[in-house]
Length: 393
Image (tube, rainbow, N blue to C red):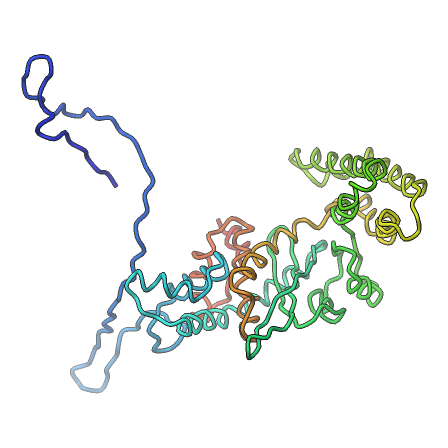
């Protein structure tokens, strides 16, 4: 878009001779600025042309637009826009109602929810495929956070969002507990290494399955000592410096083109020695039995096998920060729309959060992805996952 600016007639006089200034062909001073075009809502009228044979034996009607709900008033694009705004940009439906009103459309939050729910239903098979894809990995990250589900009278139940993440996707399950059974549902069929914090449900699950291995998170260990550093500056300072050296090695490995090969070499040459020094520090530090320092040391010791697994497995990250980052969108959404109103709401949230956050993770516009995925589902095709579209490109 271009906009031309001209001098007012009163300013077109030469200050030197008093002559009239003439436009200088092809000469201008150009600059750019970013502006915003207000959202527009349009009403599209579809005419499905009819065809007939002169014999009177056949009448055919041209197919219409694809619909999430047969005979529905709203387009697939409308539903995708609302779903991405709620779960991708964390806008509650009531807030969207007011935004649509300003744009000239009167719509209820229930009508918007109906579109979100219909979208999540057609995309449910993609959520299941995404979970299967992640469970087939050799290494995943797992974590959980609370999620309120509102009941009648404004009383809420405390559900939990369980996340399973890898480099090319993240999937969420919203479950009504933080139990071992819930962890088992997340990791059903998984036989690799799960990077986790020290939560007991993962340990219990490990005892039930000889094919599951746990790697533990150095970032969680570090936080324990950061929290008490003010009270134990010398002791905590020493171990925090050593943990910092571990992270220096990891940053150096990521700087090269082959991260796995660099990790294998650098961890063998340097990280193993640093871990040994941390172990010696833990054995030698003096701390009272019930002190915060003793508890932090014991926490680290209880996870030691999982904390050292990364030395043997270069594919294993040193921490679980990737899956924690993958939960940020869920946490922001929880703060904005206070969880879900019903179990149906948790199911819709699990599907749409999973697909939207996976699209973000692999660098695809979530709204464009949801539109393509929904249209494939309506056509009866297998819904592509976000990382599969990247592979196509």
